[in-house]
Length: 294
Image 1: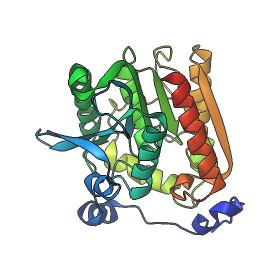
Image 2: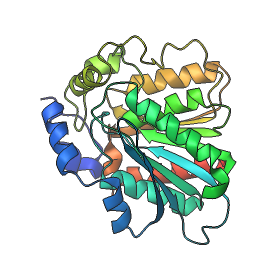
Image 3: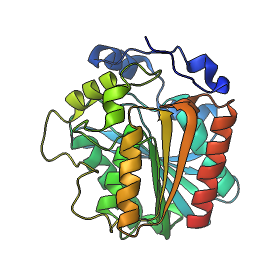
Image 4: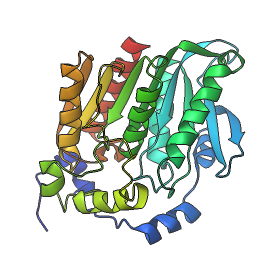
């Protein structure tokens, strides 16, 4: 297995190569704590909204410190996990850090995992429609809503921004999944990188897209001018690196403002290690982008 010059602060992750397949993901779905567990552990002030669809799912409206009866901007976060894993503790903790620092209402959607497209996308769109229509009751300033996501959550965030561009002010995409065709050079070259690699990414799409031609490919859209201002991160040793760069280039060409960060020495999902200076800097940059956007 090839050794990559991973940043020293991420050394604990440099040799971490977790398995990814349907069995492992199913076990994770059964035994991993859910979002509610992490919110309760953090003593967050939240409101639970249940959607009793054919595939039920939950949405958590999380309020920062202070008076909840005050309209605030909103940050809607969609977690990564290969469309197969539930949100982990690090992702929820980062979400809480961001909304507390910005003093905004936070939304986190506990969408169904291990389901074929378009089930998660439809759930997220339904959640957004409900939140927008009930913004006054939830103390959300619906004129100032941003959406964000990491990895597969970045794909879902980009899709929501595409469909609801009129109502979304900004999007944050961290090492996002964007190309179901697996067509980039980094996807072909990074087949054994830590945490995530091209082989796992191929398995992910086989579990989520199944070759469905209706699955959006964000490197081959007809129009990119509809997207809101974007913050995009790409990691040096990530099979998804070239997807993020290509998407950035298409947005810039279409006149969309883009804040782009290239994380040298990092692998996909590096920010799970919160003690790394790379992670600390990235969270600061994400917060600053959202502050200027909202």
